[in-house]
Image (cartoon, rainbow, N blue to C red):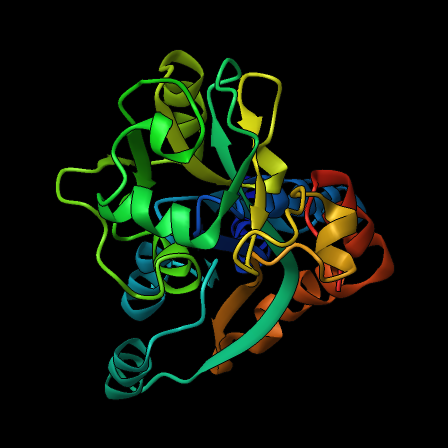
Length: 270
């Protein structure tokens, strides 16, 4: 009898183990994937989904190493990453899970409300160093950035800095929450965060991509109607051979229920 129970336990463990999935990567996508996983597991009790961050680069590296089933990226996969996967005998499939807008945030006491893309480029490349240069107080600007492994770091450099280099010695943060906390405590600070992370501890500035003709507030509505300019897709990548395993979760995220969660969290649904 004991042997029979043990055999059943092993079989059950094998069965449930096969249903376990890991998602790793983009810090920006953490609140979305965690909520999707929680809701998915409620609807599918035999499934286990664990979600961790670390940055988009970490997600792709983990996919290459086989230590994650799904890599979550806040940027598109790079050519060299795709090549490395192919060299490892892997083919990654790309799925857009949602869209995100990046908000530029400052300390709540900062009187600057509007910034052009050109001013942001000047600030983050080190050409503009004092808030009085952009209509603020005589106060040193302290720019904060995500670290280089972050897809958000890459996207901001591409979209806002037009691929120019960040200023040397920029304050690099390992997570978006750390940027919010630092800016809320530093009067001269400025940084960028995903819309889902906005809170009362920081102030979001309005941005212009037409040299100051129109300044637009970062919001889901403005991202949807395409008036807010700093918007990007959020991706899931998985190995094509693992499709059967990950498809139930991916399908859930893309479903009506899953896309409702996208909106609830503060991202933009497909």
